[in-house]
Length: 169
Image 1 (cartoon, one colour):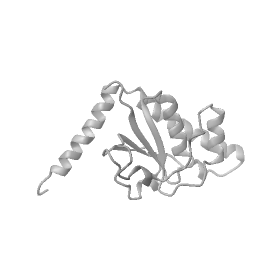
Image 2 (cartoon, rainbow, N blue to C red):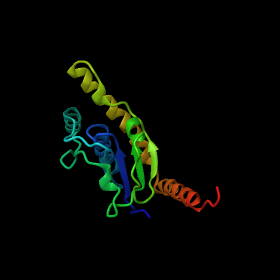
Image 3 (cartoon, one colour):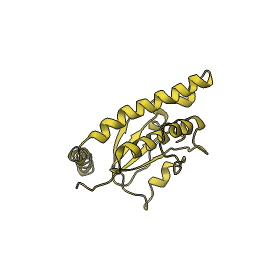
Image 4 (spheres, rainbow, N blue to C red):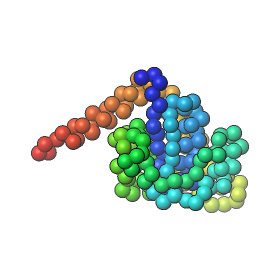
C-alpha cells in the first residue's frame, strides 16, 4: 500500500485562517502522500489577508486555496476521508456531517489568530504562532510511516464495526 494517498480534511469554523494554513502546510510537507482539503461549517468569503500574506512569504502555494463548506465533503459524491482534524472548539461544538469513509477524527484545537487584538505587528505575530503550532502537529504526522497510518485507520474502522455490531448494548 506504499502508493496510497491519504485523504485529509482540516475543519475550522469559517475556514479562512487555521484550516487554510493547515491545508497549505500538509500539502507542502506531505509531499504527495496526502490529498488535503480544509472546510468549515460557516465558510468566509475569502482567505484572511494576514494568513494569505504569511503563506505567501513562506512560498507556500495559495492559488487553489479558498474557504469552503464542509458539506461539500459529506455528500454521496464526496471522496472517502481517512482523517479529519478539528482545529477549533466552536467547530467541535457543531454537529459534524457524516463524512464518507468513517475517518479518524482528531481534535487539534488552536486559538483563533483572527481574535488577536493589538497592533498590526501583534496580530501578524498571532498568525505566525498559529502557523507554528499547526506545523508542530503536521511534521510528526507526516513522519509516521505508511504502516503506522494504516494501523491508525484500521483501528478506527474496526472500532466503528464494533459500534455498529453491538446488539442490545
